[in-house]
Length: 171
Image (cartoon, rainbow, N blue to C red; front, side):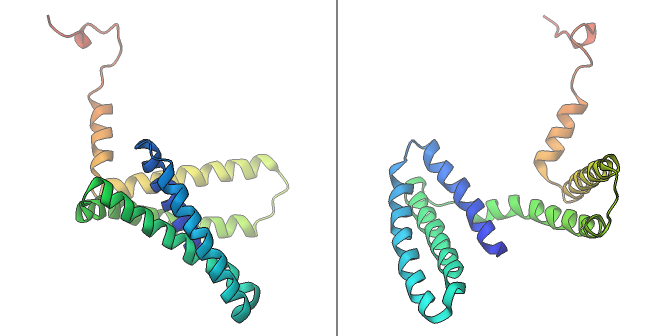
């Protein structure tokens, strides 16, 4: 169930790369091929697994679609530096898992708790958002995410105000 969400996210990003390259044709052609794969696998799996075979067919077709799009992208742009991409994305995935582990008991408690006041629930949700954001940022900082460190440095080195004479560059 959750695997399909991952491939849908990957497809959305990958298709946007083609659109940014002004190529609408390739994603549509690949989507049509995968539509046929989905229909064929759906028919085969429906006979063997019943209704449960349809989501399986859709998942397989979506993964095939993403792999075909990545192959087309690789042909078009050359070899990806996979090691650099993985080393850049890995800390973000780890930070997401840490955030999920911290928020998991909070969401469990919230789902079990039935408070009549909508304001209390809203405050609880807001606190959960702050906790999740704080956990994610802290984990990213601890894991050394370069973009986060750059963002903090820019915030730290930003001039106080436009009227401050020290923020005017010397000419």
